[in-house]
Amino acid sequence: MLYNVRSCGHFSTRCNKLGVQIVLYMDTKQIYLDNAATTKVMTEVSEAAAYAMTEVYGNPSSLHHLGIDAERLITYSKKQIMSALGVSADQGEIIFTSGATEGNNTAIFGVTETYGKRKKRVVTTTVEHPSVEKAFDRLEEKGFEVVRISPDENGEITAEAIAGAVNENTCLVSAMLVNNENGYILPIGEAFSKIKKRYPECFTHCDCVQGFEKIPLSQKKLGADIITMSGHKIHAPKGIGAMFIKKGVRLSPLMVGGGQQKGIRSGTEPVPMIYAFGKAVEILSGSLNERYSHACEINAYMREKLSGVGAVILSKEVASPYILSIAVPDIKSETMLHFLEEKNIFVSSGSACSKGKTSDVPTEFGVEPKYLDSIIRLSFSYETDFSDIDALVETVSDGMKNLAKIRK
Ligand code: PMP
Image (cartoon, rainbow, N blue to C red; front, side, top):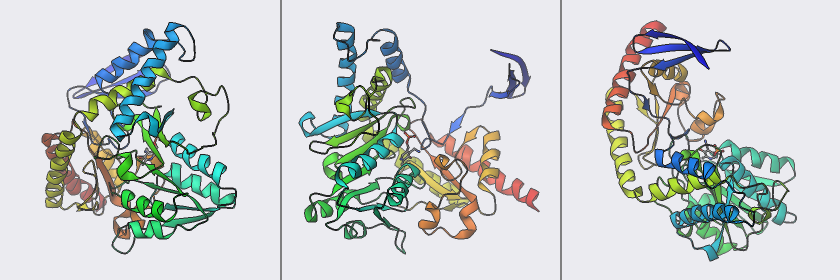
């Protein structure tokens, strides 16, 4: 229950019963440039979830027709995801998870539990999301030999570097497709195909969270045995993710229970979330190339305009167009973030996933120490338009003048 509405120009503040103040902006458009952290759910997608909640509410394991109807929604969503990955049902399984954190943990611990009794070497990179990074830290504590590949002096992670770290004792290689902090694209297809040629029994996992439905990809091109995806990065709700698991790969489950989803992920399937995820994939698959071109234009425009006002572009020229990492010299990331927020522009300081903890990823990519405190991540969606960029650039430029005065 909200009460105590106080209007003040372009925003109003409200206090809830607990006395927590909520600021509501009234007449200013929200410019949301934090789509790598999470995205707004599409209307059709939320309608799909509501439909499944209220109309198709059976337990998919039930034998009556309400259960069978619910199972059908799951089958629909699996088909959408398989089609987006370019795979058919006989090539593997789609398993739904609560998100990519669970998917990454399931892939990494699932493979190493099953295949890592004798093969104790595992390979990853130093620029992974914490849900991969920390899983590998745990493997190391358990006695695995963990090889972490860093970007070279040019800030590149080459296919040779990843594949070269694999030997006959390696049971798993895990690397992301698109880095969540700067959009860097790793050469996964090339690396995994080299690995499979030399060591066909080494399993390959790709965290595709920032690539799926954003950049053109397929399971075949990636050569990945396991692919992890997350719903909330593609305009579906938070709390749903999926894994593709190639036929023949046996994963030891993280949790035991009722044996749903082939025993890999026990627990009653969250049908509304699964259906919503499938709907988002269906809608987005129809516009991937169009959205990609739009993101390229937005990204190029932004690079030019931001450089023009003195911001430093940190993302490489060849990267996902959906993410742009910049530094605003001499202004702390959080100071700039809140300055932008006052103008209803929402961005992230470095990586939102690290919850204010400093990330090592920029240093790994060779970002100069003087910029480390000043990094802002901008990330786009199909809704981002050129006027949003103009507003951002103007505000950053304003901030550079005003915040610099405060500093002196
Ligand atoms: N991997 C990458 C690359 C990510 O960007 C994220 C989300 N920030 C995750 C994994 C974790 O995804 P989820 O929030 O669905 O657990």
